[in-house]
Length: 93
Image (cartoon, rainbow, N blue to C red):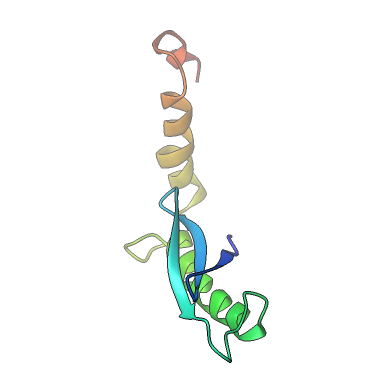
């Protein structure tokens, strides 16, 4: 689970996080009296609310069903191990 990094730039506060393996930044809010700093409690609450949606979509597959350990093993783990090996050593999985 990721927490997100808060960045203040150009009178705005951005959140930086990972989506699909790439680091991205999205605007969270404008700097104003309520959201005056990345350390402000109101900004941290916005971050938590935002990152909760990001983490929820990253954990749950798009079709809405949960992934079993066996499905993960077959689709992600073994595939990554297979692609990381040379052609001659792939039969040693």
